[in-house]
Image (spheres, one colour):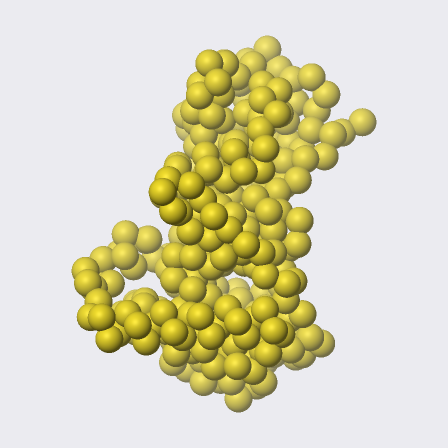
Length: 298
């Protein structure tokens, strides 16, 4: 087997009213270098990865074995060197990135020749929804849903924007963020929330970022219920708006927040927020347009 490297981007889901259906790939990466070996070995080099005591139980390896088993195959032993720039439990799709890495690992070492559609279906089945899986796999701004057991998706035009992320030191478990949501919505609220989401998607497709930013900040599906769980929620939104951001949203289920910024203004706003939020990691990012990739080493 020729050594190869898997690279999977982070992703931000929801983008305000695009609840459980919209996701954007970001240029932070999970990287897995794969080498032939006579036994499984996993080496990790990142503070963003969970503690690992047993190589055989590593989450990416579990995902790869599960995928291989679907085609009645067994993974040959490999040596994995894993690095990650994606903070855990911060709303940046770390679990989706690991799932996609496992799918790509199985596809490569077992020569499954999976299509992108097959990878998306498998990842969605494992994750439970495609909003992070789709952009991690294919890159860009993706709108996706599951209808009759099949994942349908469409890619929006690449956003001509920069993103500033505000990442607090504390995490927020997805289960806690889910439990903050109501069990049901009234018909009137659901209709209004859907209308806002529709206008958001149309404005992004049209490149009207002023309108898109306004819609992002008027979500009715999840942000009003999660705002109290997010440190400095209101102050970050207000300050970002004053500094020239189009709109600011909770990234995924939080606690990270993300502003959409006009091109060339991102560094100025990021520098400002590094002073405004000294206890945060403030990161300036661009969208990733390629999704997961495989590079063979020479």
